[in-house]
Image (cartoon, rainbow, N blue to C red; front, side, top):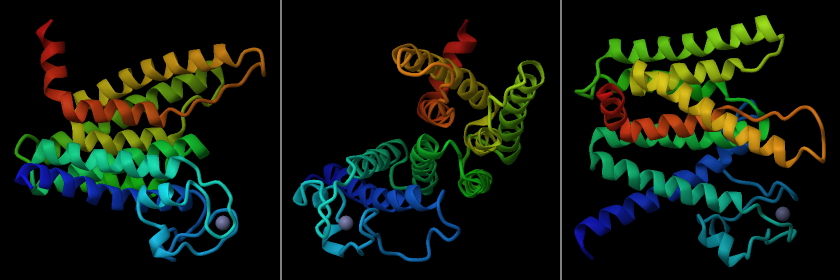
Length: 259
Ligand SMILES: [Zn+2]
């Protein structure tokens, strides 16, 4: 096999395995105090321990035709989807960095975005553990990267978290609603360490725009069913915007300052 294809294939397989682990994190982190304690996975319906051969990313889902071997209850399509997405993320990280130290940090960043997105969709929270680990690794990463020092990283965190906190404060002060959670603010401190102050601002603006767009569409489409409250989590839009900036930051910055 061609060496490049083999590397990409390996990155994808590694991503699938990590994706399988992310499924566990997504399920347990918001529910349990010790998400990593039992290493095995359990069927959410019958509680039966899942055998290792039924726990192979994507393949097992296909072989079992999306059903638990023990109780026959449906397995959400989201599990193989998260695995696939993480596989793709690993390949993208590899294509961006090659097999370097950077790969570990970039892939960690992307895996965190995936985890945060699905936890926020389910529970409307972003766990402190991920934000803290993300901030910490972002600061550590500055020792390895040449484009960014710790001041840039720290400034990214302060600008991102500070700006979003100000918006949240104004929202609460003048409209009396808690429109934004502190999880989103801490999330900005995390991504700011990776993408800097300009990336932070881009993430907030692009995330707000996307969120308003999708939120408006959802509110419009479900208008007839229930009136009033539509709680759209902000995290997934922020995560997507931060990811776009991570890959295309240079182009976005050039485009913006080119005007
Ligand atoms: Zn089951």
